[in-house]
Amino acid sequence: MKITILGCGASMGTPMAGGFWGDCDPNNPKNNRTRSSILVQSETTNILVDATVELRTQLNRFNLKKLDGVLISHAHSDHINGIDDLKIISLQGDELMNVYGNFETLEEIDRRCPYIFRPKGDDLYFEFLKKKHIENYQKFRIGDIDIESFEQDHMTCSSLGFRFGRVAYSVDVVNINDRSMKVLEGIDIWIVDAGSYNKEETLTHANIQKVKKWVEHLKPKMTYITDLGTNMDYKTLCDELPPNIRPVYDGMEIDSEKI
Image 1 (spheres, one colour):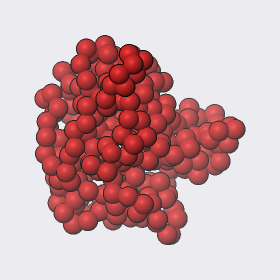
Image 2 (image 1 turned 90 degrees about the vertical axis):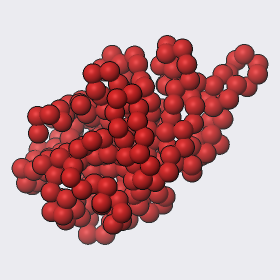
Image 3 (image 1 turned 180 degrees about the horizontal axis):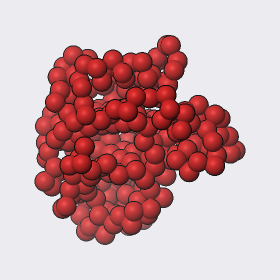
Image 4 (image 1 turned 120 degrees about the vertical axis):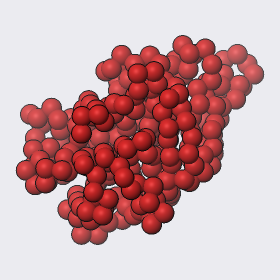
């Protein structure tokens, strides 16, 4: 199984609109970040996690023409505002594409974009996605990839994390309860939100200190931090972090068999 980091930026990306790089070196291409999203692939199955506003660019970068399902962590705009770009992928597949999320997330998407789930009746708009409600801690399968969902605290809402075999993805999370920690036990690779970086107070995103405590408990072979803001320069992070915790970058590929 291969994980591709389609995007690893915080909600405004790097650079932010207006060309604001913050503390990030603009000469390092690994600091150029679209919003956070990943692609999970086996030899026969492609699964997208989150549909960012840059989804068209992200998919075209890898010439991806087929998706077997889409997982949505939560309904914040930086994770769903590219959902219209799934229309052409769905049409090419000649069937409605399944989009998975908890009830609150899918109903919020339906409220904002009702046309994507049902036909309007005037031949101008037509549905191209099919809702698949999942409960916290539900196990399910897309193609040949087994998935386990788990609850995450994002303060303003509950987000979903996803486990794929010995790989897990936790974006937009500030706290993880004991039951979700149990789901994460035994993972080899963890891609996890550290968007609060070195802030002492964590409101909606975990900081590096909290991630280190989680890693000490779970002991994955490798941990990769994502949701990187303009205060998180790639080289600075590499210098500050231990060898078993690394920052990701847009386009990075992680082969679960090589860890």
